[in-house]
Image (cartoon, rainbow, N blue to C red):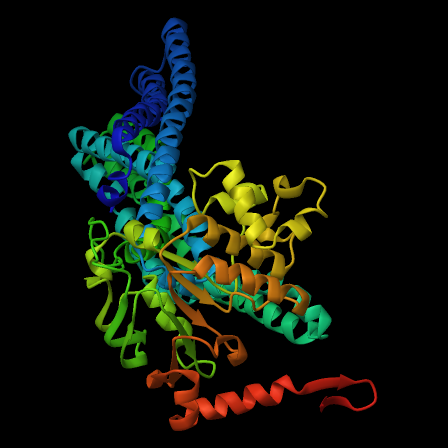
Length: 583
């Protein structure tokens, strides 16, 4: 286990070894005073007197050892923490690199709470292993081992008596581990669930307040917090009795040595000075032994967390190559595409062709697979079966960077970073000049709301873009896509948050952006896509039909139902007296 973690230490692995060596000296300094105490007692037992000079020297040496113990221990901890935090940095960077290779959809499925726990809580807990358990545990265990060997040289019978308490303490410790492991899975599952619930509770607080769902939401929040408390207490409850037992037995190395050793001396099997020596050694190693074994109580937790990290790191990465885009054109083909979320297949052998420069609309009821197809095209996931090709080149045969250079993807929800709106738009083309960014913002109809902001396009977006409305965020994201100017454009309800006054302007901006490009539009408003070159109708993960608006009306029952529903919703109105009516 140490080897796994130390792989991330890199050049600081040597610093960890230095920390172990320095702490080893520190623990040795804590044991040596007991030998000097033995040297003070032995003359009194054998000769009945002790010179003041010898006593003074022993006392000075004891004081020096205690000072050196403090110095070495502090220095060792300093070195171990230096190595530990560099190791955590390397681990986080490595995990970030692995995450960037994972399918983006898989990352989104994990949830903010579990990823936060993984990156912060779980990795931070490994600091205990690196900075304490590894150097302190080894040092505090090595010294007692040396002392026990010395005991056998002094008197093997008394040394064996000193070892008698260890099996009892170890049995109690193993019982604690075995009992604790049975509860550990529930404990960590409840912690992850509580993290996700807290994040969801905070993010959804506005909806909770508006719809007076405080009680229901709070009960769920309270229930998950209570479950975490209960599982934690249940875990500790099975461990506490055994913990108390081994904490009582392990330090008492003289538990059998003192009574039985005294009887050995009376019977002549051992000498009194040897008994005093062994007892002094026993008193010296009790505390280090307990500290070393005490760190073992963290090992089950650390093992569990390392396993979690390894599972995250070993998840299948997104299949891609290092090749650039080499397709013959920007036509798109879906060939017998199957896709499953975990065990449930949601797309069942979809095949369709999207010619270069055409406008294709994907329509269907919610859950029919429209957005899933779009996410597969931008390689959020790998297909389970079949192939998606651009210009005859499979997505897996090009790098994700090369694919992203060919596609602009504008979804309903776009994340804005807490930096200026100018820099948020420039993400679409990092090398773009300020003038190019301003022109893209103008084409995306951003100037209207930018003029209301005190700092205009240099205004900070706020965390997650909270300074802007949903429609304003969508216009910023559209400006990114305009600036990127990719030959393929995917619009997933790009005007979902637009008010009627701005939607027409946005459609004009979109029309200008998509001119001459291969475009896929996902829309629920069928009136906006009646002039599409091709409309693909999805139903329960299958391609029901494909064709123009008129063709589908004449032969596709599913499309007719969607169109009738769209026609009906277009006639809806609101009356103060009658509520929602048709006009």
